[in-house]
Structure formats: C-alpha cells, structure tokens
Amino acid sequence: MADIDDRMTEAAQAEERGRYRDAALLYAQLGKDIQARFGRFDPRALNAFEGVARSIRKSATT
Image (tube, rainbow, N blue to C red):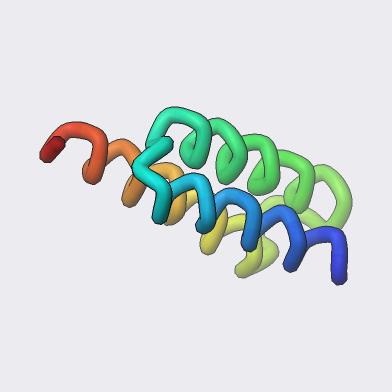
C-alpha cells in the first residue's frame, strides 16, 4: 500500500511541476501495476487512470 501511495505522490508532484508527460506515464504504469496485482476493477487503478487523463488535458492547455 505504501508503494502505491509513494508512486501516486511521485506522479502528482511531476504534474504539479508541469511535467505532464512524465506524470501521465507514471500514472499509466501505476494503474497497470495495480490492475495486475489487485484486479482490473480496483478503485486505485481508476484513480491512476484519471491522473493520466488529467495530465493529458493539462498538457493540451499549456
């Protein structure tokens, strides 16, 4: 669990720093890893994939 929280924090920090591509990649890999470990429908995976979408949207507006 701490690993997931740490990786989510790392992706969020990349997003806050304006590194949207890095953030999207970090979120995407985290979402895939969560699905592989805990199942396709784990809500944490959905949160990670929402982070991907958010980072992509932010990168398109800058």
